Each structure stands twice: as structure tokens, then as C-alpha cells.
Amino acid sequence: MAIICVAGGTGQVGKEVVRLASAAGHTVISLSRHVAPPGSAKYHDGVTYLAGDVTTGEGLATALAGADVVIDCLEGQLGKARKKFADGGARLLALAHRAGVGRAVVLSIINCDKSTYSYYASKAAKERKYAESPMETVVVRASQFHGLVAAIFAAGAKVRLIPVFRGASFQTISPVDVAAALLDAALESASPDRHRLRTVVGPELLTMRKMAESWKRVTGTRGRILEVPLPGAMGAFLRAGNNLIPGQKDGRETFVSWLEKRRESL
Figure 1 (cartoon, rainbow, N blue to C red):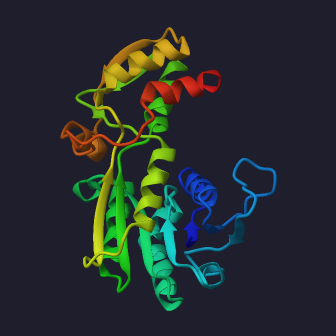
Figure 2: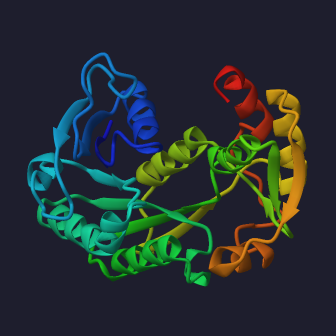
């Protein structure tokens, strides 16, 4: 069994990594700016929850002490966090190396280095920090989450229009399936390649229109599906299919099965 530190252990993916690793019998330390309170959905018995901040380094040494591997699930989606995203990753790596941690795994996005969209560019910058580290590192690039596309549909449905981006298809995946891939990367056998790249996508490649039709059926929404252009860097990224890896199928939870589990809350 391993000692695993999960940075961002209360986030969308991090909490699932914590849950899976703990259920498998590993010793788990969850590191986040705000500690999960006992009894909350993010709290699991037997897990050590510690507060820390990668932008300052506060609390990191304590959380990393004795760990075999660190899994970086930090999201950095907000403006301030995004600007310091790569530097925070470098700080986490430096302190992990100093603490004698054997491996670092980081969650990223498929083909993030092919987009100038600011969030994706910040992910690519962080990947470069991992590639420069003296530690053994694994970058796990994931496709978009089911919840991202569902949120777009839900936002439009408020005005009875369900937007479909022209030319866009997705291989969406559930956070649980991504968490499983991160844990596999953390525990895989040692490799002569110090820096490795893995990709994980959902079990289906679907057009956004097909996904919208499924969302309407499951939620019972009567809004009209409307094809719209998506301008800017993100639109270009999707139209080029850079969010896809055709022929690759991973994960187990389809978009429809994910929706059906949340039917009452959508």
C-alpha cells in the first residue's frame, strides 16, 4: 500500500481520487486550501485532511512528508489562481522533491498545448513545469467532463434555447473515471522514461447535437436546440477536433448514464 498525497483533494476530481485511493486501502492525505468538514460529502473516514496553499507554499511540507506519490488535481479555473497555476505546480514539485516523494502525477487536458484559450494555456504551462522537474512525473490528459456540456445546455434552457456549438463533438468523461486513471498512473510500475504522458477519454464520441438531444430526453426540457457559432480560441479548438482522440475509448460512464443518475438535480 502507498502513501498518497492528493493536492486539490476536495475538488471535483480530487475528492474522487481520495475516495478511490482510501477505499483501496492506501494511506491518503488530502491537501486543499479549505479542509473538508467531517460529515460533508467531501469527507471520508480514515483520510487525513490538511490545509495548504501552493501559491505560498504554506502547509505543503507537512502534507508531503513521508508520501510516496503526489497527485496534483488542482484546477486553477479562477482568474487569480489561473495566473499562478504553473508557478504553484512548480512549487509543489520542488517541495515534493525535497521531501523525497518518488512520483508526481498531474491532471491536464487533451491537446491543451494546441490552444491559446487562457485556461488551456495555463494547463500547458504547468505541464512544462512537470517536464522540467527532476522527479519522475506522469501527465494525465483528460477530455472534457460530462458536467461541462450539461451546464451549457442547462444555461441555455433557462431561455428555452439549448445551444449547440457548430462543428463541435465531444468524448466527455466522468470525474470518477478520470480519478481512476490518475490513481492508476500513480501506482503504475516504474519506467525508464522519467516523464510520461497518458490520455483518458470517455467511452463515446458524440456530436454536441446528439448530446443535446439526449439531455432534452433525460431532463424533459422542451427548449429548442439551436446551432450557434462559438468564436475565439475555444471555438477554433473545438472545430478543429483538438479535444478528441478518435479511436480511443476509456471510462465506463456514458453521458446518458451520468445524466440519468442526476435526473432530479438537472
